[in-house]
Amino acid sequence: MAQAAIPLMIAGSLVKTVGGYQAAQQNAAVVSAQAREERNLGVAEVEKIRASARAAMGRQIMGIAESGFQPGTGSARTAIEESLINRELDIMMSRRTSEGRAAGLDMQAKQIKRTAVFQAVEGLIGAAGQIAGYKSDYAAAGRVGGYSVGG
Image 1 (cartoon, rainbow, N blue to C red):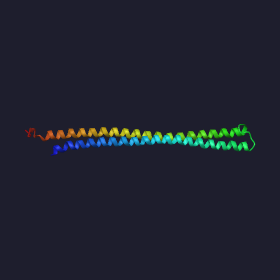
Image 2 (image 1 turned 180 degrees about the vertical axis):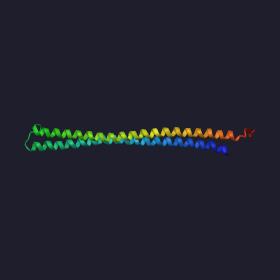
Image 3 (image 1 turned 60 degrees about the vertical axis):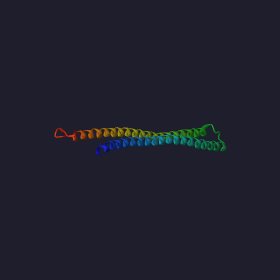
Image 4 (image 1 turned 120 degrees about the vertical axis):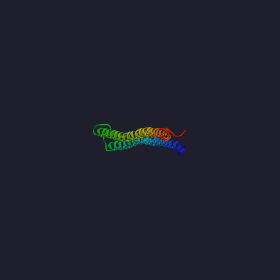
């Protein structure tokens, strides 16, 4: 009866190893999807900044023109250029932030995968160790005092 339990115990160890590996791969896929989503949100944020800046600069140009100044010259031009510079700085900050978060998630996914591989190898080595231990115990049980008793 004990001999029949040995393969079941080894099979259980292998199933646990494979299940843990698959679960870790799934977790890594989820984190990778989060990284992609973070990048997509960054692109959407950039578009939002651009649209908002265009609207603000349009209002700024209209205000300048309504006040009697020529919109594309002198201090009016400088104000528009500063608005463009501020828009680009906002875009750069947004991209940097979203890409930083996405890169962190990518690193997390890689770490999950790396850990899964090491845990799978550990599980396989453990199962192999169980087999060797049980085989050794079985062989030792057949010999008592150096004599074969299993005949």
